[in-house]
Amino acid sequence: MIKLLTALFEQGARRRFRGLLAGLVLVGVLEGVTFVLLAPVLSTMLKGDHVRMWWWIGALALVAALYGAALAWTTHVGYRVGTNALSSIYAKLGDHLSLLPLGWFNTERTGSISRLVTKGAVNIAGAPAHLLRPVVTAVVSPLTVMLFMLVIEWRIGLALLLSAPVALGAQRISNAMITRADVAWDASAADANARVLEYARMQPVLRAFGRHIDGNELLDASLTHESAMGRRLLLRGATGFSLYLAALQGVIVVAIFLAIYLTLEGGLSASLAIALLVLTVRFVEPLVAAADLGSAARLATESLKRINAVLDSPVMPEPSVPRRAKNSEVVLDDVSFGYDEDAPVLRGVSFRAPAGGVTAIVGPSGSGKSTVLRLISRFYDADDGAVLIGGEDVRNLGTGEVMRNVAMVFQDVYLFEGSILDNIRIGRRDASDEDVMEAARTARVDEIAERLPDGWETQVGEGGTALSGGERQRLSVARALLKNAPVLLLDEATAALDPENEAAVHEAIRHLAHQRTVIVIAHRINTVVAADRIVVLDRGAVEDTGTHTELLERGGRYAEFWSQRQQAAGWRLVHD
Image 1 (cartoon, rainbow, N blue to C red):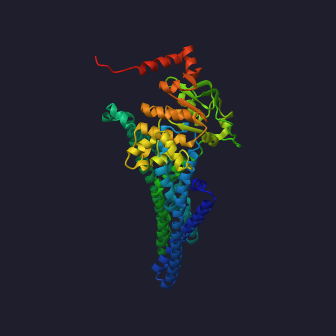
Image 2: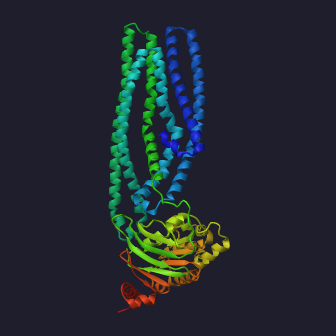
Image 3: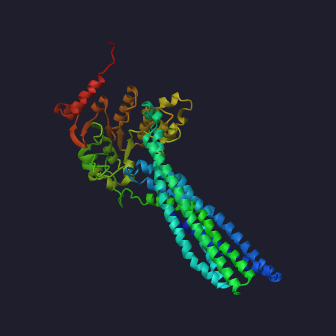
């Protein structure tokens, strides 16, 4: 745990942490000396040598005062180091998570991260103030007592020295038993946490189909498994702890028998024997105290290992010298990609989205439309081929330059907890109020603000739960418009808008397209027809490209798509 904690800190905090460790070693030595001084105090008292007894009591009081001062200082520094640890964890995790590819974030890992930034981080932050002292003193204090015991009565001291490997072996066996069970329980707890979050988010769907009454099989199975792993952990913990305590009690029993034997043989006075037995008990005491905190220490250590596993996850490779895009043209050149190695989503996709126009991507569900936009945004890197913006491979541009050039409106809109204005301003933090209002008016967000009691300062709630789906989409469009990026990607961005607002947003987008490249995934007829260029995707490959008229003349998949949309547009409810 100490090595893992040291690696977590920056240079300045690392020096403070090492100072804390040195202070804790001093505390352990002073605690051991305090225990040792009990032996001459008790021995002289039992002999009736009161003069020497008071000298030893004075020495004991002095060492105890030094011990108290050192303990107070290390406690204060421990809290400061714990605060630094918490800040460092959040900063490093936040920085690293922002660089990981989106494919890294699956359901299991999302639940694990949630546990790490709550319980795991708190466990680690508490270690310097509450866990390190018992751990360090459990080593230093008994070692100090043992060294003095070898000087005072070498035979009992040697017995304690020889019993140390037995106690250490029992402790390792105990830790191994508990650690295996703890790892299994934590994995089941992370899965249960993810399932609970999933169950909460899926309430609208479950209730629509009456599934909330019957429960959720995946959630029930996950919670049952977590409960079973928890019981297993408790059983292993109790067994391991009992084994370790039995070994420590065996040390005391050996010392008692040896002291009795030496006293009966005349090699040890009764007063010194009693004093040494008291010292033996004090020798074992820090080891028992450390065992009581063993569970917390293991939790902190495992949390540190999991945080390091996240921090060691490979990030998107970045160029040493990022290139700059020459213009806003987007080109996909023979691109192949799959979220899993054995399940390709795109196969040899090639098309060009020229600057100053709107390119629409159409195709059936699962054809790879959204994946194309994610590759352009460099949420992932292509397995084969290249994605180019302004004539440069996005891998040579680097994530920062790609993000500067691209704004995207997602199919699943997420708003952050805050006001309407706060969520729009995320698009460009340094934007003026006038620019924010212009983007809001273009996306018709001003109509939303006018209807709400708090206007622009209305709190949207976590994920935008206080707004409707269409209102969330309009805020997302305004956010993308405010960014004013050369490339604008729209993943069915107007699907939840009414016809009037959809027409207004599309008119604004067409106006903006003169200065940038717009790529839109769309199913609605008016969006597709208005595009300057249409790319037809089917089963992860480009079937055809061209204008609306050209594609209709050639027939094929697009003509089928057009016919289906025409029929859907003409569908009406009638009275028989």
